[in-house]
Structures are given as C-alpha cells and as structure tokens.
Length: 357
Image (tube, rainbow, N blue to C red; front, top):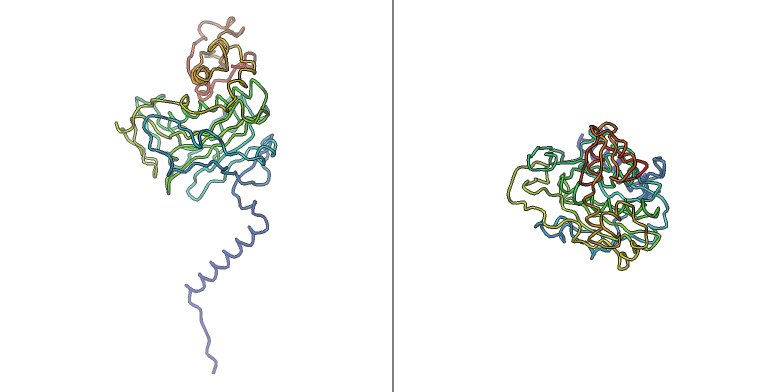
C-alpha cells in the first residue's frame, strides 16, 4: 500500500516565498539600472529610464557630523563636492530617488541651467505629506508653522511642484534660511550667466528616523570647472527653541536647541578662483546697488539672504525697487518687503518678467 505524503502549510509558504525572491532577483539581473529606484526627468518633464542618483565621492556620514551648536551650515569635505566627470558629461537631467520602505526621500540631483530655472508661480503642494509630517505651531517660529514641505531641488531651480520624491519634512529655519542661502547662490548665478551647475541634495536619516537630521548640498559650476560655484555643505534640520523626535516627527518647545549663530556665510561657497570668476560676470542692477560688487564673498552672502522688493498685493507680483512698473503701481496695492526671494515665492508671489528680481 502506498503512503500519501502531505506538505504542511508552513512549508508551502516557505516555498512560495523563496520562489518569489528568486523571481525578483532574476527580473533585476538583466538591468541593474532598472532596480536603482530613481525617477529621471528630462527637459519637458517626461520620465525616462531610471538611473541611480550617485552619492558621489564626498558623501557625508551622520557619524561624522557634529551635534548642532549654533552653526546652521557646516562644510563637508572642506567644501569640495563629489561630482565625477561622468556627471558633467550626462547633459541635461533631473533625477529623483524612489521613496524607500519608510516613505523617505533619497538623493535628488540635476544639471541646473537656463533650461530648468523657473520664474513661474509654485503650484499647490499641500497634498504631499512627507515622512514625519507632524505639524505644530509655535508663536516664536517665522510664519509660526514648524515644518515646511522642503524641496530638495528648489522650485526656482527646477520648476518641480508636488513631487513626493522631492519634498521632505524640514524646519522653517532649515528651509527658509539654510537651504535658501545656497539655492539663491545657484539660481542667481544661472540667471546672470546662462551657465550650468551640477547640483545634488541628499537628506540624511539615522536608522529608522522619519525626519532627516539635515541635508547635504553640493554644487559645482560646469563651464568654468567650479571657479564661480563650488560648495559641499550640511544644513541642520533644526529649529531654535524646538526639540524634535526625528524618529516620529513629534516636537515640543525646549530651550535645549540654541539660536542660530552662523548661517551659510561661515561655509566655503567658492572655488579657489571663485571671487574672480564672479567679478567677471555682470551683476544684476539690484546686486550692484546693494553690495557694490558681486565679487565680494560677504556681500554676495548678504545678497543671497536679504533683498528689498516692492510687492503688488493685487497682482501678487514682486519687483525690484527701480522697476518701471513700480512707478505706475497704485499706492494701495504697493508694499515694501525686505527678506528672502524664496519666501515671497512660497507665499504665492511671482517675479516680474521685466526686471526679473
């Protein structure tokens, strides 16, 4: 008499699991780039085949980052970015990493140039809720809201709106003070020269954190080999007076987090010949009026942080003070604003196309 063999349910599940794993590996082997987990967007916004966002040879490690003590931005690798010759040879590109298993963003990179910079009004991004998004209001925080939906590659540099692969949970200070400083350096340079800048922003998470401890920002101007724009910095994701649980995103008022003592001006933001290279580029009228010369490092730092604009509250456009449109503006619609350009864009204002502030 033959004995019928039976298989336990546990054994069947194990066999099915192993088969699924083997199938997944076989699908990835023919094209490793297909498993890279990034979205590559060419000019015009059309998705192309995936390509890995390189971490570069100067990638930061959280274990090497000192605890925040008042310097909002610090240099990584002595300010030298980690781009390769292959990066420069790629041509125009924008790459955004796929979200990981925790829903977290990875590195975003691109070649920023006149083809990518945008003066258009930023679209609605309120439907995106990045990992760790537990919003709280504090009266002492600028605009009162602790968290911003922080673009890795700024809207002004690439025109991206509600791209979940490009938005992380960032404090108001990291987003509007730390990151904006470097974004303005790149954006102003591209608009002034029509040259290109290799650019990469990498959020750094510890273990199972849902909120990044900060972002690594790298940039290098292409046509001049990094003479005008070259930096590699870490910007802390902190808010003075607020303690953040980076694992969950929860937060509460605390005196343990000190005020910002130094911003981007304490970091290396030029190559060895960067000042000379910038001096050779014609500054915009407003930069020349505000700082006298674009070649002075401290002057360009203050220019990147604070500008005076004239707002039209009716049309929601902003202008340079010397713009002809300002003269014909109704006094009831006119308002003077001194602050960050990106702040106005975040509030829905668009730059005048005539004076290009």
